Image 1 (cartoon, rainbow, N blue to C red):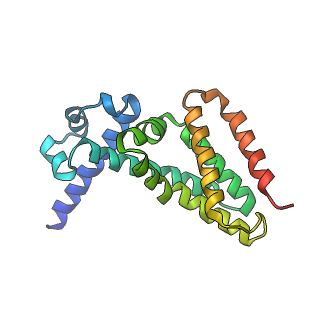
Image 2 (cartoon, rainbow, N blue to C red):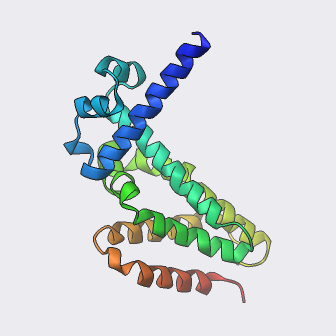
Length: 191
């Protein structure tokens, strides 16, 4: 494949992901058809099928991009002092999960369309991965008690995911939820 065709193929792929993401965020996976996505992206259905096996495969690519975006927000917020960065990263996850452009794809349609196991695999590779890295680092620095990091990672990840799901129906509770999360994290800190 020559370079021009490879670039065109990648532009088509990115356009499909961008338009599918926009439409899925606005209306949800079930209410968006492939014809609508291809029209919005300015490509044919054949071009879509050249890139993806169908709507579920396209959604998988959209969900992967959303997971990476959330992970990038967490990492960006985590810069600086190790403890403050840890708390800020956890807070960034909660804030990102209330973003309407991410919320439906990440928290509602993701597990429903792909199933819990596949959704968890995305989470493990992105947000949970960074959370466990941060917990390991805080333990090495003596800011958290030394113990296996995996159980604490899963407990915190589960709590934050549950809070994020709850915030989909109670968005006005974000400030209270962020405060509760900060208090929870502080209770874990070594004195």
